[in-house]
Length: 450
Image 1 (cartoon, rainbow, N blue to C red):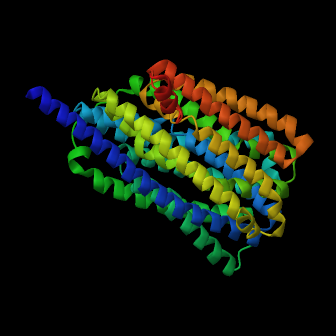
Image 2 (cartoon, rainbow, N blue to C red):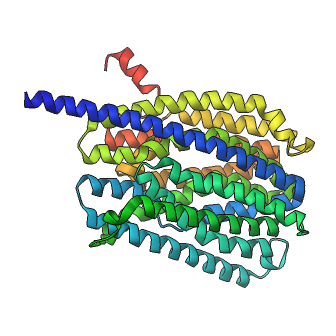
């Protein structure tokens, strides 16, 4: 009888987890679709207002701020999804309080340190701050600590399965405020320049961080926030620093093509390519939505010893992401002439670039959530190594292909390494955790009788 009750309880937990993950993923996807719409409108607005050259300057500076801001959390944002659910499953409330307080302080301090070090280094270099990038870089350095802190808040909200609270402020509220602030600034007589756009982003980010932090404190509540705090810095940082390396490499990997183009081609060309990558975000957000909804559930399932539930979560995510990515990718390519044309007639030249990037995203989705398993369950050092290797390969291919093929060369390079990276993550997850992540693995298993 007891065994039967235990089996029923396990089945019930499994169904609840899968149902909750599905609803959370749909919520994340809906918010990110809305956010992508805001972001797209904001990019179109800035191109129309600023022109290709100033937009290219803005894009280059924003890419650097995004990369450094994600890394400045020292991996504690992703660490929140790994350590907080595990501590809660074991009833270790003091550790949760310690991680919440210590992570917030460390993320903000990390952002400030990266900004100061970067400005000192650029001042010593002498030329970049004196050119057209100078003022935008200084304003971007003010935004960076806020980006780092908001990234940490997002990780904490994700760890509690509050998907909408995690992503609506940074991806919906911030974008909307930035767009409104830019319109007001230009109507008030401010020049439509990259520096003004970044100042608007500074204002929008500050408001969004304040709103998200306040709501998160209310939802966490006094019972969790007040009481003894226990800090396990050695354990946390042993895992989080490699995750930070993964974050840095992954962020650089996501933008290495834009960075190389910034070195090899004029700002107007960078703007053409960057516009295509912004539309590609419609496809990438499918994986983001699934990861935001399920990554922390992987940790909780393992902490509870529910390996069957973990295997089913992985299988469901792999299938859902592949189907949704293919569907969204096809729709994006079909709508691309219209979407690109809104930036300006010359941006339709980016259609082949966008098509190649979308193919790369769909190809990567074939291999499932290998990266999530490595960062959440153990294997973050391997994950970092794979990403760094693919980053290096992507940079080499971009430097080789861009002088020969131009913008399409950068797109081909990134599509290839994106697929290779996903495949390597799947192999690593299978080797360490014994879980087959590719969406097609279950089909092959049934055919072979395994």
